[in-house]
Image (cartoon, rainbow, N blue to C red; front, top):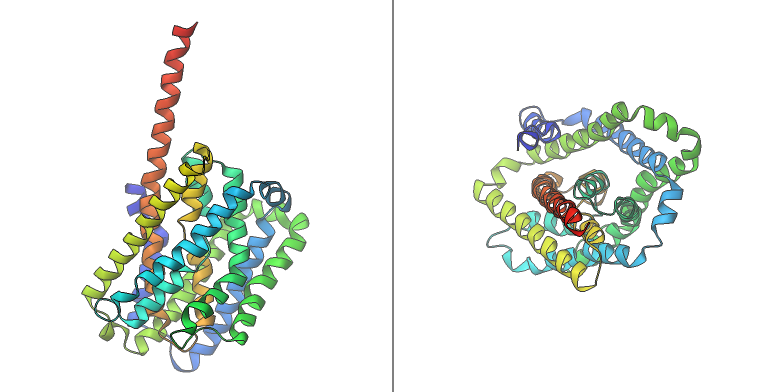
Length: 332
């Protein structure tokens, strides 16, 4: 609990929102800040490509049944649940917040936290690396397409130009990183702590710019405490439904405990790192700050819930190991 409360990245996110509320970027400063943000986001995806071992990914893709279940949870189950929340508009959810929920539901899985929680819970870490990485790569193509599909009936969605911008800003740097990976991976690993600051710093910068725009447009006059409470409730319900569904599906399909853990943690996550730059492109000119709120809230909720769940899996595994050790002398 102390570790979760001391989540420095969460505090930094809140700080970025607070700073944008009292000192928003506006006027002539907007364009230079946007250019810097675009460069840092491209650098983040370049580093992701440089970190990812192709050999590991190729080896892990042989476990296709597991990856298919994770893919279905990320890009099918979540969007269906998002659509099911439509009756909440406009009585409980504003159209902008509901846009944020739909956007959240089509984002790819996270990489770092999915792998970390799978490892803590004694799951199939190799499969988690491959599944979460594949989700992010596929998400660069699929997320904009799903946004277009879900929003087309509501008169919105990204243009072909926006999709091209996403691929140029995210996929191209990733591919370049993959090409250079054999040459620079050692340097990237040795400097992972410093480079980690680049990852988080870029997200903070884009969040700051998004909320600056929203504050200038009157964000806090449009959003009430009741709106935030409803948003938290919807995020919690989404996560709970997906956690239960992936757990039940993994057991019904006969997966091992290790594979179940991987499916649960990879299938229930949504990537803030991918969501922030994508929102910046897809919803350019709209209330991006409000649209990003469901993603930011879900990010912290998933960390707290999955940390507790991972520890529960780990405790269960430890208890089983202790029973096995106690049974060994009796069998002897």
